[in-house]
Length: 175
Image (cartoon, rainbow, N blue to C red; front, side, top):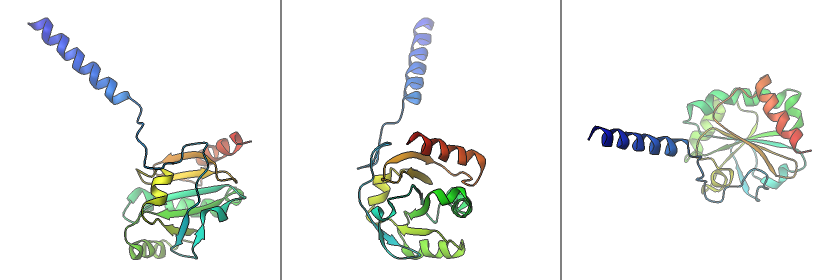
């Protein structure tokens, strides 16, 4: 009886380890994979005019997906602003995509943060799904032709050396 209990405990533990270490393969509906090109999308301006995503082609683009209620999103917003105004940030454009359900809430946050970058409101989950934003914040690096070079989930200081290395390695791998 004791051997059978030990065997069952080992089998359950093995199953748990297998399930916990299995890679996540779930994607958002219509998510664009690394290496693939982003589809056209209409961008609804929060602090500037509406644009088409394709209007950012010709120069690499860093897209930050955020929400006004997301603490980690708010923590990294200042570093994205600083990055955009550094020499490093002049190599690419930096924009924000809010997933807020409330346009007034997103606009209030941008005003309180003194945002100077162009920010847009996602409509009908179009960008959230295409970019794969099932966790926030999400930052996507896109080449000048709209091809996804890298995705980073979670907050980080975007204006430090470690982030510069992340950006540079992906931009260099494109060549």
